[in-house]
Image 1 (cartoon, rainbow, N blue to C red):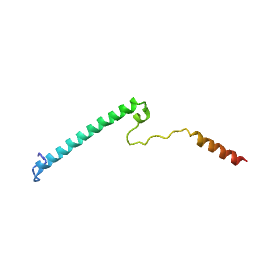
Image 2: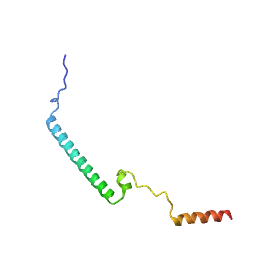
Image 3: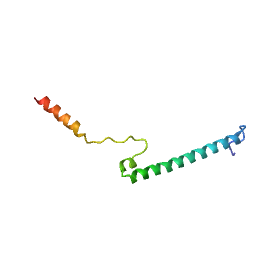
Image 4: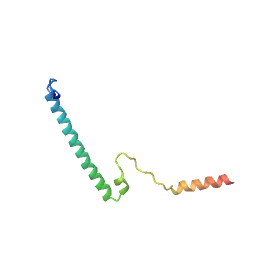
Length: 85
């Protein structure tokens, strides 16, 4: 006994296949364009010496500097000196 699906059971299945094929083509073109744009942005960032930006993914926010600014450090030292009095 052989059982096969009946692809012609629904009316308009040919048009549906055409629409789905067109959508998949559109998605493929957009994906390739995004890959090209991403490569261009990475190349520009690397060429300008911004290696941290070039190595990050587009969805991750940039890292904050771990070093405190001198003014903030000085303010913290003043607060600690004031508390010890």
